[in-house]
Amino acid sequence: MGRQRIALLAFLILIDAAPALAQPGKAGQGTAIYYPDGSWQEKRPADVGLNSRSLKEAIDFAIASETKNPRDLKLNHYQTFGREPFGEAIGPIKDRGDPTGLIVRNGYLVAQWGEPARVDMTHSVTKSFLSSIVGIAYDRGLIRSIDDTVREYVPPVQIYNPIASGNKAERFAVPDLLTPFETAHNRTITWNHMLRQVSDWEGTLWGKPDWADRPEPNAAQWLTRPRNPPGSVYKYNDVRVNALALAALSVWRRPLPQVLKDNIMDAIGASNTWRWYGYENSWIVLDGTAMQSVTGGGHWGGGMFINAYDMGRFGYFTLRNGKWKDRQLLSEQWIAWARTPTPAEPTYGFMNWFLNTDKKLLPSAPASAIVHVGNGTNMIYVDRENDLVAVVRWIDRRRDGWIRQAPAGGGECEVGASLSRLCPSRLPRPWLRPRARPFPQASPVAGSCRARDRPRSRPPLRGFSRARHAGPANRSRPCPRCPAA
Image (cartoon, one colour):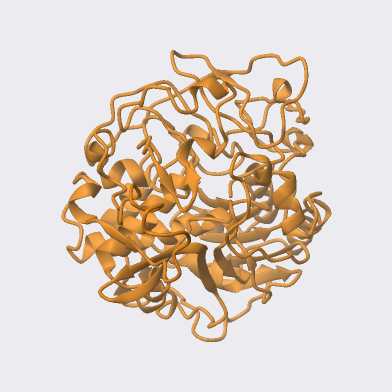
């Protein structure tokens, strides 16, 4: 499984490393921290305390572990998320390239493979860019507190529809404006809830109902189930992520790709080839101008299209606590919140910061390591203790035999198409929905959760949830062939 395979890559890279360089906190002490400019300086592995043989093993491992899903990602969509209700793609989808990646130590590029300059979809890694944009809004006072309700910041939204279908009579009962945070439940949702995917936001946005994303197995409950109090239950849901993107657009009053470019990507020396797309129908009118509300992933197409070098720069930016050279682009406070475990899912911080709390996510990596993860699998592994960033793209997330090799693994989890064979202790998923927990303000504390799977007589459709939580609330988990969008 991809999110854990990156831990093995890190392990292979770091074995036999020079002790002084492998010790936590040693990199950069006594010398100026290196930040790449337009060109990224390269160093030999031995120069930064890495073993060349181990590095080659890690690269060979990544290339050999290419995902088995088709390179035609439009075909892949209709084999997975496209089978959900209202699952048709409404954003651009691009074929993927070869298995690709790069490794950065102490800021220097020490290895690369595949096609690192190729622009590909990065799927839910997009969510980490989105939460960073919300963070900058907070840093600048555009959002006063992450515990404010989102409703306070989102006025009614005018949909851009220059050629409306039908006639006035047919549209008489259709509201002229979109009010995504005006139901009794949605009025209580805060920015903190949205950022941690514990809001249980209700509604339909861009033609996608919230219940249609990884729907519950009992169709009778799709429209009738009671809402969970915000903060009590974690559910990975791209409709709600898109609602956060729309809220951020309302706050910034500028297209979010422009905000990202001006405040992060240009500052970290990213290329001019990345693009952030929305949907064909996600256009609004704001201040008299048509603007596209972007998506938080590629679930229905769209999201960030980016090369591995730019992903690596973003990972290094998060490694350095939101700082680039002499500029604090994103506050240390925001980074600390992003790294704080969500009580309802301790291996998740702000989207899409997957945390290694108690080494549950990546047993062979330091507990402080984090991963920005998306479908594909696309991932950015960030390891403060070893001053290491690794970008890995298009790696298989279903094969788990490597767990035998991991130094802290302990047992093997065989993964098949049937969810009855999942090993929850070794397969943390973004869709897990743990037991209800009180959600604190601003400074959440880590919780814990144990899960068990319900035996199934046959595997469910790919992309549909079929698992039960050990606590009072059910937990959602899709087929392992359908990772985060």
